[in-house]
Image (cartoon, rainbow, N blue to C red):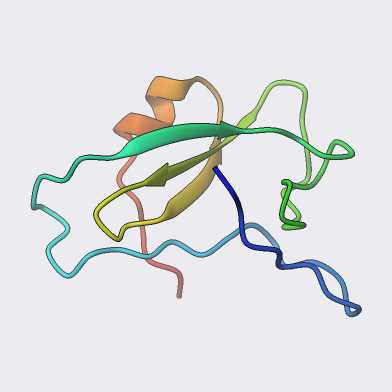
Length: 86
């Protein structure tokens, strides 16, 4: 998966936004990607996550629904209910 580059001369954003569909209860097909840590704290597109040896970063993508998050085991991420950014 190719992540958009979000780094800039002013620094990096904290994580990435969640983009939710209008109907959050509708079934959709997603592809889950485990993202690689870069320099222990960033994803490959420059978003800052504050790395940890015990955590992973994931991106779920499909049906116009990009969503990323930080969690432990893969199933914890899959079972979490995404919340819109405020």
